[in-house]
Length: 495
Image (cartoon, rainbow, N blue to C red):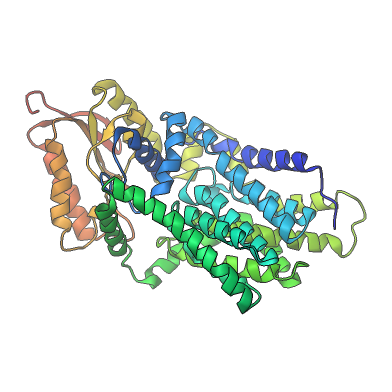
């Protein structure tokens, strides 16, 4: 067996340090919609506001429980929140290193974990943010690790733990469920009969525990509603989504392409551990299926592919160095640095310029910088404990101003689909403006805040006009403007 590039604790420090270091240039980027909404709903648990029952959301429940401490530490500050969230990419890199040692040996494992630490921070994949994929991946890796151990030793307990970790991962992001295709990696029917039932039992126990908690809080009917909403929201022909997936893949290829080639080499060259290649192939296939469950093809969906890709790339890099034999010891470092150049070049623009310039480089059409200005104004001109109504999909306004978000829709895209009850749901949402606890309302005149791939142009324009008419009518007055945001305050005597 090859010697490790260093002692285990040194290797762990290096991997954790790299995972943190490559994310530092983007720590202070303003909140975007996803990480703001997760923190908003997570901290809302402390106020008794529950996902599904009090907020319409399509993400699984554990995501918000994990975001509760991140939101508390962050306190509306993106730097503190993302520093707290570093535990997830660091844990993923270390777990991948451990799995790699079991599959390949120390050197290829080190390469794989280092590659993962680097490419998982890719700005093009929004790797600087704690999106749902980032929080889900450590648990997904643990599931694969335990499953591999169970197939090597025939241990039912390891198989049960593998199922349990997959259940935990699925409660963070449901797109991990196709990873269960790993069950097909069992080398014999006899062993499958021994290991598959405890795997399924472990998964079922975790899901049952989550269901019990949701039932105890009265959230099950609302969760069923969310599932129907998700199906309706995703009711778009697959071919209409392909351009989005293709655009994201081409974008990521610019920075990750060298590692994809190394992964192909690793897959072709094979692995020394019997069954490891089959395991990784199935894991990759399941992850690809999971990516397409996302629906829209955003670049961060591809984060789910990175663990098996990084393991194959690590094996490929070791193959390159093994034949022909390197002439000097740090050849592995030179080869890794060469493969990393495109990814590092993608990070370089974010190490220069001011905070606003770097934010606009990452989100050229989104008003996240202006949202901070609007939120500061709201915090200064509205009473503590009051609510803010946001006409648009900008949950960061409520998070940054530390005000309660009025209504059940952090993302109003659900109100723009062409469905029989859309008009009624729009009316219910607009009815929140009658709540005397709503001290302010914000209208966002930006297309991305209203339109999604699944939006009906007719329904969306109807909603925009109705929202603007309500805010321009009696009971509200224009108070401030931070384009594209217009802020309205409730007129005295209209409460």
